[in-house]
Length: 347
Image (cartoon, rainbow, N blue to C red; front, top):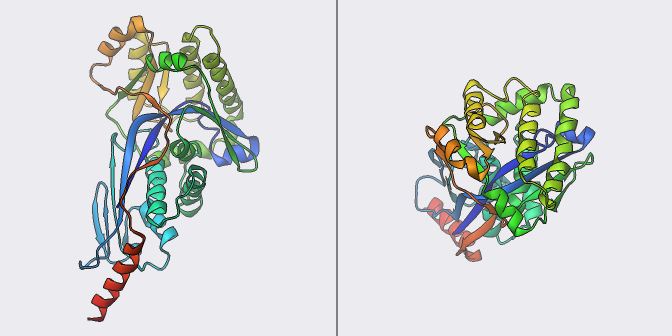
């Protein structure tokens, strides 16, 4: 049995320029970090003694005789990558610290964690870079989902990074080597809240992509903020400038589509700023889910009081990316299970 642990991400600047429809023409970049909230994927070969071949547990419990009948698209296609002939049964379990469809990159974290677990189960031990590229291929080319490219890379690599996307389709991770004290200071001023809402990120992203190139004036300003944000983190100046930049990028991002925000999001944002937050933004593509705010220490109590109807989620940055936290796989297990299955079929 293999258990992988994969972090969710928090994006600061550059969101929108990580869509291939944009960066393959103009290039793009994001500044983001992964946080200590995770999804967990358990993978093992499924014993051959049941009337079904595969068992997949997520928000549903699926028991199916072949891969083609697996409903979860990422699980189905990931298994096909490793077992195209569908000869061995698998059991996959997924659980997360935070709810899905809330802007934290949960779907890509699941894909990354699943590929990590399956590669280890098969004895292949993929690198984080390979896992990220395989996740991009699965989501964007096989499933043809409306997703950007930052979530897969962030979840696989981990840490506080600039991720640059080239017109060639290649990407590069540049760690932000700010001092531990500076990073801790930023962490202590970020307040994450769950608005209690969810959405289909692919639908929202699809609406944004439809008019992406016509919003070039905003996207070019958004990507410029990536380096501005890094300069603030690496400098010795007032960190509140980071919060002001968040406010600016949120204002710009809303210009990309009417689907970016919603009445609930706007009300929440106004409450937070009215109570003393300097800036903030929605964590995902738009319209619902988690938000975070930059809050000076002196305003922390007033902002949390203003948002007391929402769930505040304590978190810290993390640097590990996707990892294997349990490995009891035996390379001979798949062979033995397949032999047993064939014997049972023969009888």
